[in-house]
Amino acid sequence: MAKRKKAKKRRTKATAKKSARKVVRLSSARKSAKKANGNGLPRPSNKPYGQAGRALDGLRILDFTHVQSGPTCTQLLAYMGADVLKVERPGAGDITRGQLRDVPNADSLYFTMLNGSKRSITIDSKHPKGTEILNRLIKTCDVLVENFAPGALDRMGLTWEHIHKTNPRMIVASVKGFGPGPYEDCKVYENVAQCAGGSASTTGFREGPPLVTGAQIGDSGTGLHLALGIMAALYQRNRTGRGQKVLCAMQDGVLNLARVKLRDQQRLAHGPLTEYSQYGEGIPFGIAVPRAGNDSGGGQPGWIVKCKGWENDPDAYLYFITQAPVWGAICDVIGEPTWKTDPEYATPKARLPKLKQIFARIEQFTMTMDKFEAMDLFNKHDIPCGPILSMKEIAEEQSLRSTGTVVEVDHPTRGKYLTVGNPIKLSDSPADVRRSPLLGEHTDEILKDVLGFKAAEIAEIKNSGALSAPPKKEKAA
Ligand code: CAO
Image 1 (cartoon, rainbow, N blue to C red):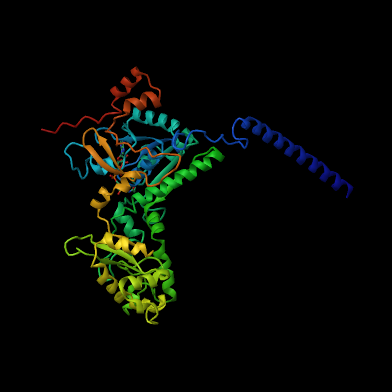
Image 2: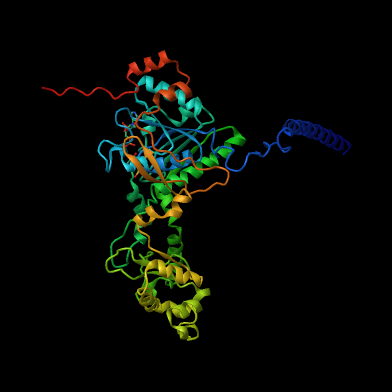
């Protein structure tokens, strides 16, 4: 017993010593941090908001992305201040440079609107000298982002093991069509992801085929998911000093955005989906979530109604929500005050089977005014609704210009064009929205300033052919 007590005393002493050492370390850390904030963090900047740089200043991205999903991610990071070095195949570049061209011999809007604020370097990743340059870039960058077809990065020799050994801090972020499973080796484009992620089967009208949406939820949506994954990995790296792999599968990204439909799938087991207009029309539900036209996805029934001019203007419509708390105001405005107390209409439950008829009455009213007049009128009464805006109206909307959501930039070969700026507004980090780079525009600058090559070395690299397109094979006679 006495022996055990003694041992315990020894252990306690040892622990006390250890924690004393810790205390010493902490307090010395604090001392050195005194110059900072006193809590180990840098002192708050005394520069006025918006003048203390950008959120991601100092972050360098090795951007191996192409087409849409990956470029949306790296463009967003560039807007927030990251130095994004886009590596492109010599002679060709990102395939979108030449796709859907509207101005002859100029980079397409497809490319320019997805690659703003980046620098471009051409490197043949399969050339030995190209591999050497890429390895140097891996050592100096924080994140490698790619969305090649499965296996393409490995075939370039850039396996996770190689990258991690070369730079243990590097984060490798990938978009793929599918996660591990039966389809993991498949190439995927936007609409394939919309179909495989549950969006298409739940979009459109019940009596029609599945529909894809105009919003690029498979590509741009997954790019957004990837940007969040990168930020989380960078935050963890602050603690561990170690990089990690980040994978966003487009199928997963779409499903994440379509999660309310997986909710409804499970509700189906407990009865019909009463807020779907199909219920009010007395049409039985099948085994899977049906397409619900313009029904609202939430608990407040909504629908698209016509406004004045709908006969000639395909966008003369308004989305109208019969939100329960303002039902009385809706009845008064549309001229049906008795519906406020009539038991057939007074409660949300009583209204569910009559939604079609109710929206028809609302439409009778909205057809007497244009969508903007309707928006003004209903909003005076706190009734939620929204005009269907055409892309023309959005492009011309001054409030979107003044917030920087729509930005006009100038380009040396195509002239001025509109792009979508940063939809995420940070109060101390103004968005940095610049035009997209020309193919290889910054090759020399990156070799010199980022990698520290001397002029003679750059000339030698150029002579090796690693930065230029391979000569075209002569046609056999
Ligand atoms: N130097 C030399 N070779 C290069 C290069 C460079 N700088 N950059 C790319 N390449 C090569 C790749 O190594 C690859 O060659 P291998 O097949 O011989 O290994 C080749 O170019 C083509 O890459 P890819 O297979 O990714 O391109 P693809 O046009 O055939 O497919 C896509 C395009 C989008 C279907 C495919 O990349 C993919 O499934 N990506 C993942 C999912 C995704 O992001 N989809 C969204 C696309 S946007 O709608």
